[in-house]
Amino acid sequence: MTKEELIIKLTAIVKPYIQNEEAFKGLNENTDFINDLEINSANLVDVILDVEDEFNIEIDNDSMEKMLSVKATIEIIQIKMNV
Image (cartoon, one colour):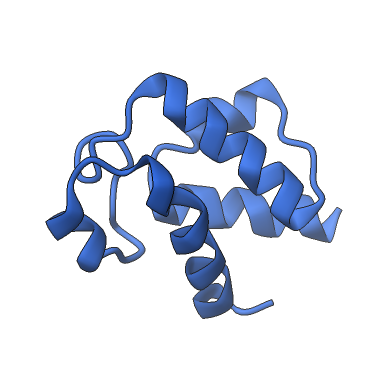
């Protein structure tokens, strides 16, 4: 799966949780979930659970703590899918 395909899937996953519509329209690799999209920490857990379901992977606590941006999340998804 390409990085672009991952971003498209990730965009669909985070959409229900965003608070900043303008930042969401410009979502890219450098988008930060908390600072840019204003996703609160409880919803960030929901995003991570949705990512696990969508990609059929298991995300450990260490990886979870790093999943604060689109880029970091994509890197973790790629690592977990290649294991």
